[in-house]
Length: 124
Image (tube, rainbow, N blue to C red; front, top):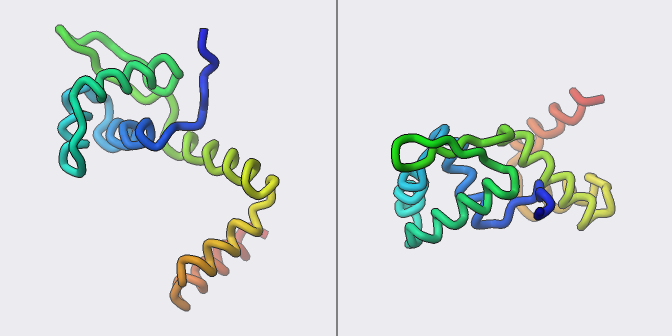
């Protein structure tokens, strides 16, 4: 059996965002939501939803002749895992270089920097 992978690919994440935003969804629901931003085949969405189910990201429940897919973990938990994995892999587990890069690269306004500083001080 394939090992369950907490890190989502770019395409898997796009599908999961739909399920998190809309709630339990059919393949048709996800397909129609994705069509608003890009061209994708219905069969691709169906295949990817089954991959997400095999990987343990969604569970499916029979509903008539189709299935409704439910997220297994909340969005914040999955995103948190992905960020931790990224920080570990790219920055050796240290968040400071990531924060510095984001502050410098995103050209934050003075107001955004003040808000960020307050949030950091609040974590001390």
